[in-house]
Image 1 (cartoon, rainbow, N blue to C red):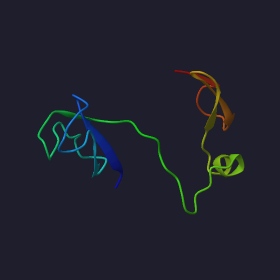
Image 2 (cartoon, rainbow, N blue to C red):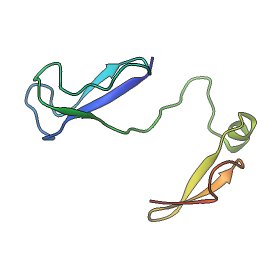
Image 3 (cartoon, rainbow, N blue to C red):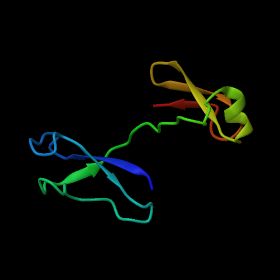
Length: 91
């Protein structure tokens, strides 16, 4: 099950310290309020963490059939591995 990070819409909370993590199934609905303080909350976008036996080298990413982007300049990312997705991403 994925681990999701949520934060109160106000951004501040003394009880949950401004964010909390929840393990949820993909099919479950997003939470709309914090289980600790009951304030309205939203799910945050966070970086995926890979570790252990997984490698993010260019050859390993290509062998897995995935695409890898690298920051070229402020707000611009270019594809360095793979063929799917756009060649350049602009934020």
